[in-house]
Length: 253
Image (cartoon, rainbow, N blue to C red; front, side, top):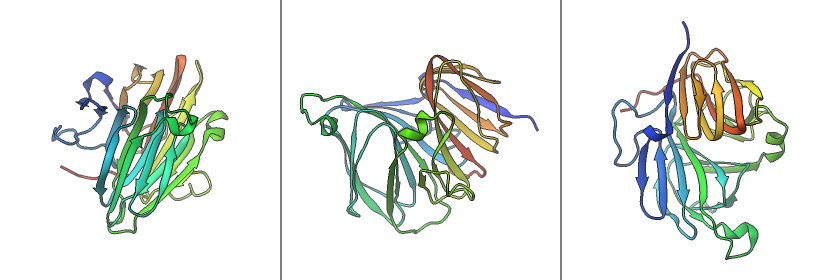
């Protein structure tokens, strides 16, 4: 069966603006509800968030969810009820397993890295949720800097629970049917997307041309069913692309 490519443009996403937060949602989230856009494959949330300096998400709960955060600009400070603390910055892969229940906060403390309070900037990050393959696990946290791998080019597997990825992935997730890959594609460079039943391609910055979908700009996504390894080529300024490879889907209203 031939691949099906569903292009979703950046401007078509749900949008939440709350003063300190400017957020775009690829799927139904919070009060944004569309029964025909609740997930793709195992991916339930893909939020493109910009948080103002000195603000952020206060302590709030999560349960039975694998949450992966990828920062594009700035610094995000994570604290949770399990005693984990971390500063997430560009090129650092971070995963929180909510499991039986966890409380956490995420704040923009952009001056933390520079040490200069006057150097305050918005933090821009993508947060993605996938459903775990087992409910009621113990909460957990993991992070790892993958800038060296990204600089070498090609796809970097930053989070995976798939068999065979143990020695390739940066961090693990409790979902054996899903993996997240990231590439910083140079201008004119061509890679192939994952061959999988469900492949979700998100253009985090820059622009690309995807075989069968055409030109894609920052914030655009493509939901591919039955991917055949279509070629993706970096635009004039290159691109940073996040790609979920999934071998199963969940039915969730």
